[in-house]
Image (cartoon, rainbow, N blue to C red; front, side):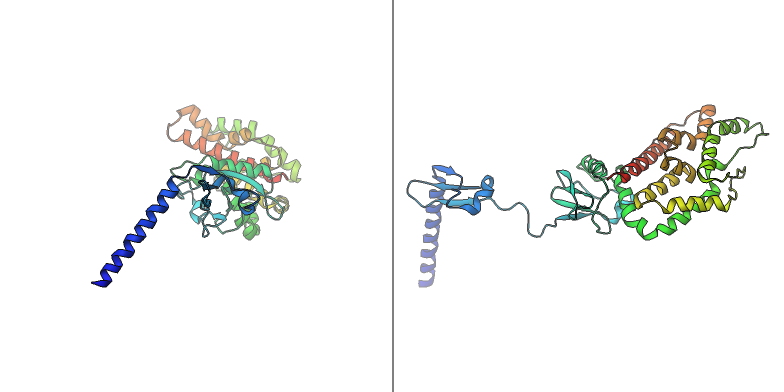
Length: 328
């Protein structure tokens, strides 16, 4: 019985004390920023702390908690699914900026205060400020509902150049050299067939200037063929292409690889790389035969138009990445 009475007494006293403190705090008549002389440690964060005081009572300093938790990381790593084009989650950042890398060699992208990293947790260190700003723009235009990697071709190419190319450079060059034997521009439709005469004529008109450039650039005349399975090119031409590819940096090689995959032509990719072809010229050569069919039979909505739009994105993004990878 005595214990119960004592407990009630303590509880009553504690509630009374809390009420007094609450009234004292609520009846505060002035709020001012901390004095820089008496509180120098708080002067740098005046926007998040205030001092409440009343008359001769002792001031009470109230400081806002740090919005950044101790367990939050100062970097953000993209998941492996980023490279497959899958939606990787909702947008978790508000501001996208760029800054110089910590070692002063290159540029990085910041999502709020986090440094952007590749799927293998390597810092996304870019060769030029222009490329960093272009990739930052891709992140800036992501929607709140989800981050869509298929809308960020420059980011994907950057990850390829930083992760895949250094590890598989020799295999990429070997693969591209083999594709020379099956290049799109070396195929020539039969001239003596009524069904392919118009195709042959337009190939001569539009592709022959590119073939002449190949001969003048590498010193070897390429062989033409009419088989859809390709043909055999001179070993000297293959060697000359390999030597050119070996001189590229990782960003350039990633761009050439992407261009070849979209164009089905290493010659068109090298034409863009060497400045012989512009984006529109390359797209016209890639779609040469198919555009003839569209002119003859009509465009299939939801098919041809989507293919054209996708090709423009792939060729344009790889060409832009190529140009920005060369700037310092």
